[in-house]
Amino acid sequence: MTINRVLIVDDSATDRLVMTELLEGMGYTVIAAESGEDGIMMAERDMPDLILMDVVMPGMTGFQATRTLTKNPLTAHIPVFVCTGKSQATDQAWALKMGAKACLLKPLAQSSFIEQVELLG
Image 1: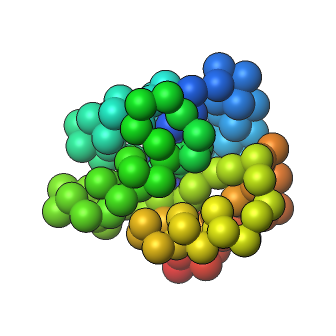
Image 2: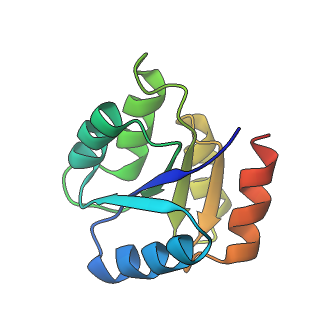
C-alpha cells in the first residue's frame, strides 16, 4: 500500500503542527481536521491514504470517529492509526477493537510511524 496523503485529526493545534512538520519532512502531503466530526467529513470527501486520529477530543472522541470510519463502506479501506499521549494497554486494545490498525504514542516518533506504515504492506 502506497501512502501519499495523510489526514491528521487532532484538536490540539500544537500537535497538528508537530505531526504535519514531521510528515511533510518525510515527503507526505498532509491535511488536517480539528474534530472527529470534521475528520469523518474530510475522510469521505478527500479519501486520504492514512488517518492519524487523536483520542481525546471534545464532541466525538477519536475512538468513536475511528469506529465510524472503519464501519463506513466509503472509508473502511483507509487505515487509521490512533495517536495517544497515554501508554496504557487499555487505550491500545480499545483502539484496535474500534478498527484502528495501530496505536502510536504522542509525540509521534518517525521510527515508530515508519514501522507501522511498513506493516500495512
